[in-house]
Length: 221
Image (tube, rainbow, N blue to C red; front, side):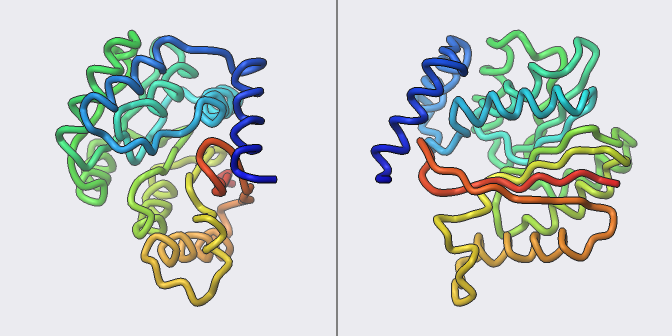
């Protein structure tokens, strides 16, 4: 099937079971107006994040890679009113857009966006004893995926759900000759998952609005 066909199927899902969402549509418009790259999760993927966080009964969640807050809103919707989502965004300007989107969604009371390099902020989160987190979503620079997974483990508990986005890379993840840092970084993450006794993990390929990609799902034992 062609990419046109993939998009048609995603449109069908969006029209039937995902549904239109004025808040998320406004988020995408605000992101575009601010010049953010159009790399948010799709509506179906966003709904999946909401449902997975709900299945995990998450009360505390961690997101590495906020962008404009689309996925942040999806995850935060699954949390109880007293829940907390801590999201890390490298770009100050992106974080500013995300905070405005999150406030418009009525979720500012349970979401904090910290701006800066995640590998600088994560040790501070540990020092502040803000974990363990029940749900972790990793969607930042792929070259550091193994480092982010390591921190997710440090800030987890038995039962924590960890999702890593964009792990197929148009199929290049299976190309041993690929030298792209995003591919090699993701491959190191999979190798870490494979040898980590505390993790049970799998990965799923996806096609649709975002092309050919996929996500990894792991649960801490």
